[in-house]
Length: 117
Length: 114
Image (cartoon, rainbow over all chains, first blue to last red; front, side, top):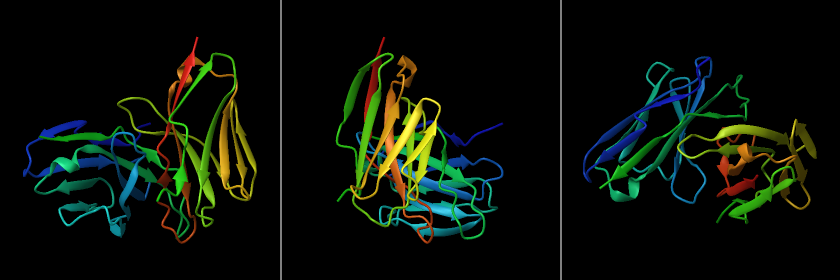
């Protein structure tokens, strides 16, 4: 039984560099969510996919952020031209939705901690 | 403006006693509520949930109470154990039509002392 996995667990990068994170959801889950968490805050929604379709983006997701889920399985989140304000924990979660009805319980991975210097 | 509020940043409880964590919300469209537990360097772990059509849900030592008129929910842990020490997040979903993304509070750090 494997849960949600994320890679890498930690990433240190210099301002202006591009970074890419990967998330592997629970295998039978068709919905995949990305959240960002900063110190002292709860997770904040960024975007989500149902299968391979990206269905919603938060206003937090600037043009420098792009997410893909090409085959409806794993997903990648790329940040271009990183800024110090991008330093945060990036969390991936998955859930199983039947038709248009969501399953509310989302299962989270361990997160990728990004530090931009 | 925060739609989900956890006004107590921290709570300290003696082992064996009851822990009560509180959460308030402002959006009347929320119809499903969840509690997550988070240990350092790990992702949040789903704990317990409640639909807005109920006022109580119980799972072992964990009970969630929902007061819709007051837009308030609470998580009771009885008896508290040192392993319960973690940050607890309250989350809400606006349900059908909302796409299912969760809106989280800032969390309450629970410390259970032996």
